[in-house]
Image (cartoon, rainbow, N blue to C red; front, side, top):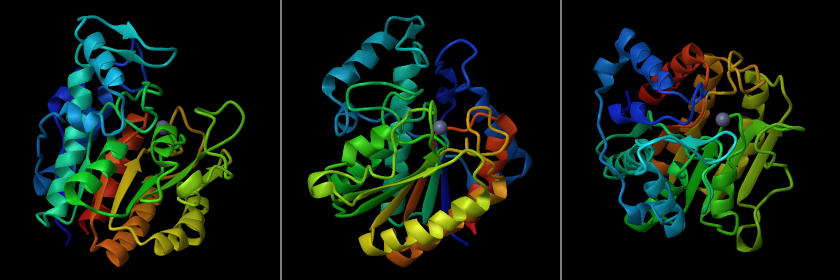
Length: 315
Ligand SMILES: [Zn+2]
């Protein structure tokens, strides 16, 4: 049995991204209720993180962007940041708690206190750019986590695996010239599908060339299609890179029931992807792995998929 830590904060429920928004507090309510029903939560225990400091956020974001989000949250009302992303008074605090969970999870795994960890956070992060909130994301949780590993724990090579159905544009742009962070994204790709980046020819730039790996997939892709890419494309790339730590941008919106994605994955499929990631972590980094929630908009499917994901992390 692995020792798995689970991070969650009730203040994640206070953040609102807009009226009738798919990225809603009910996602985490359903997730927590599911884990309670299956008694997994008793086994795991819940660790409540503190908020990340501004110095953590500016590892990836401009000080101006951080101030902008803080200032708009302080207005005390809903503010629109664009067609799909709004901001509420609780957004800045919740977003800082999301980054805080990732940092604390990393610290616990790096210290050997636990083997791996999952962070049930919102808002998600992988679309957030250096200077811009987008796609329901304000601060890039996983990208800040990778820098935290390098700056606080002095690691040379960090791998990020992003299986959210949308391309992790913000994460890719954070590291595209950086050979010390390997970024892999498997996502739905095609005309009109958000955010439009993540083509196979996007492989990084300058010294980072070859350290970005995109697997764009057509709508309708299945568990078997994803697993084939993990075995035949991701695994050899990770074996060459030899990461010292693996982070997972775990979105569950490639599930067949998801209203935003058009993929055909199942909870068992996510369990199989988790087993692949765990085996890579075991072969290269003594199992050190931290996973964090990105998307996933069908309440039941996301709850079931997170449970399946956790069972493999804990096995
Ligand atoms: Zn997504």
